[in-house]
Image (cartoon, rainbow, N blue to C red; front, side, top):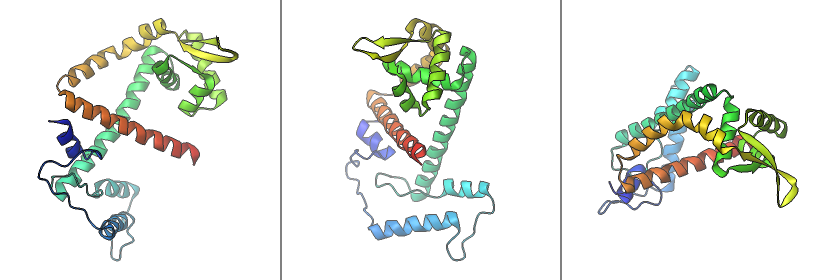
Length: 229
């Protein structure tokens, strides 16, 4: 599967339609009418529409309704709807499993999940100020101070004065300790990820990396939304 054809199949915005494939552009009024119909089906505001009787039914109705039609789709409307529900379900399950994995790993390492998440964020650069770490995690200054205190006491980080600005304190990852006690917990899973990645072509992996980059952008957007509300 090539990168462009895979991107078209996934609905990637910058992918080109397959050769000979006609892209049908619907009028804005038609799209608006479809969106309104979906909203009425969820809320039960349409005349004669059935309103879900419980939060569970409302939630299920919201997930099962067709999403906005993609111009890149080659499937029938019903097939596309089923694919999109399966996609949303897979994303939710992956998110849940990631949280469970983080908690299980934190338990094995002997720290709490919040501290492990901060340690993970710190590992991308190797060093951050307390303020930078607080902004990256959304924790308050008091909370992030407690996190750093616990991680420093456990030997995972150390505080250092910035050599270029002695007023600035930098939190630096203790690499040897992190590799020995944190990375080792995740090595078996990383091996499985590598084995899984070997099944895909270079173009397919580029598409997957691009997809996860877009997922990251969505998460960042909604983190900001939730923190600012």
